[in-house]
Image 1 (spheres, helix red, strand yellow):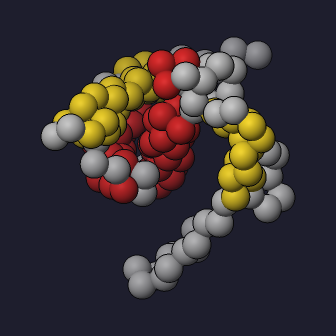
Image 2 (cartoon, rainbow, N blue to C red):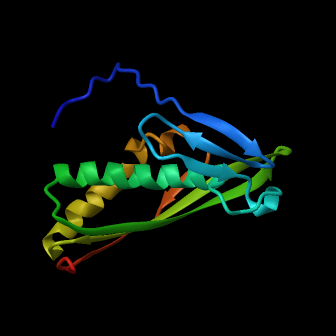
Length: 152
């Protein structure tokens, strides 16, 4: 595994283009466009990805990718991973902000013997996830780890 220097800086450009009403497109080079808009509760159609969902999804996917890295380093043979996430948006000090993101990963490892290693990896995930470290909201992980064979 290639080591990463602690002093590197990375840039991730993205462009948002308004398409009328409360809708637009989020784009980044060499990636599929994402239709974005306000959620219904903020006068949108609810048919596009809302910034609130994208924020929760960013933390959720970063948690998964961080877990995959940590689990691999511990020799965990992963059979399955999926997770649900929910963000809470509420008014604090007169402004709305995401105050909590709860993530419920369901992890399946190949053997009972690997459950402890998977738990140890999960215990370090939130502190190492770039996205969860970048938001004010408290990020809560509630993992479920089991073992089994892959379904094919």
